[in-house]
Image 1 (cartoon, rainbow, N blue to C red):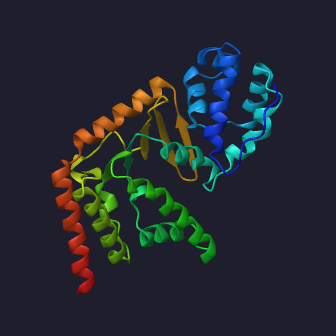
Image 2: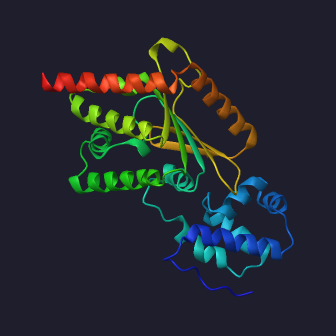
Length: 278
């Protein structure tokens, strides 16, 4: 059956997922059955249909053949794959935008969703010291656009665990970190986010190997995202997600309470402000 191409002004990934669901159901296949043909899990098919995962070209070719869709998915998967984020983070960022809950642990820097403009600029300039101002401006704009998720008063629920090192890494710009910590404190006091600080006194802990992001959705299975230097991997395997969920639970158990964490964040911000004035 011939299909028109997707409207690029709409959300291509969501529309492509909806078309996949229609085509699969028309073929009388379950998500698990289609996943078996593609050598992926049924939950992965569910995430494609929900728009939380990207359809790559090799999957599109196989889907067109299996569901007899006349090349529709090959023609349209390119538009659905376009992203303003690096390849290793694109799927995680787009899933983040559809998440009902986000739980994140960061060992070295303030999470992107909580960064101020000045802090984000410092981070990108540290990563790319030879980049042009225009390139850095674009990176900062994209990061602040991600943070607009928090403009919604309730969704997603954001719960972050910050290593104490995040609060202490002021370098030569204590005023920038003070502003960033005050921003986090305001979000906490407005009841928009939950933040816990994992203190140095916790010693060896479950998250020492790197950052962790867990995402849950209304209409798709949960995901876990692990990020390294210039790399990132999104996991949907239930056993793997369960393992990373346990890691996050252990981190929250060893972290300061939200009340004590807020007090520490504001105290450190005040110290930086005092040093700056001095």
